[in-house]
Image (cartoon, rainbow, N blue to C red):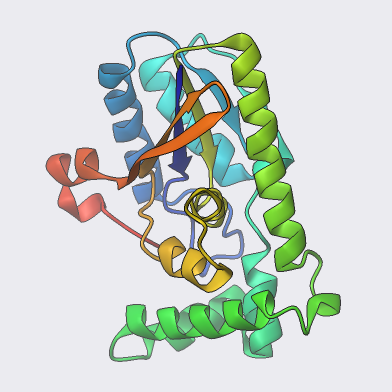
Length: 232
């Protein structure tokens, strides 16, 4: 039996020219995550990560605090969907990240405004009518992510480690959880919006059986420093 820890990356640099780089808060979150993993994992895990910079940085910082000797397996199948393109196809003002950030900060309730944009942009993407406009359609993304999870489970069934840790993104984690729970695409992305940076979602793998154990655990951050808790 293996417990799989699906971990969202630390806070990225929203509105910056390079979103994919962790912010200062993101680095602190990843360090706290690593210290927590050192406490709860009783033996070295089998570790995977997406190839995005924020995945790699989160993994490296966390592993430095917990299992610095471990080799990190990287696979682009664990990468997030192209969120900037999804925003831009909904409203071309958002082709530039700084314009998106400025528009959000001018609102009375920036988080609610971003949530509204997110919902509308995602609804357009998952609707299939405009698939030809995106580098990767929702159907293609979902197929890729669930294929990556199937491949991971097959690998773990052969290796049989006690733990596996995967560093990825909120859309990836929500898609896997949604598939396990039989959620539709809209419900999956409502779930995505709630997943905190460096939060942990756990799944138990026993033979071919996959059981969701926990979702979006982030108490280890809140208990240490609630100001470090972020969702964007």
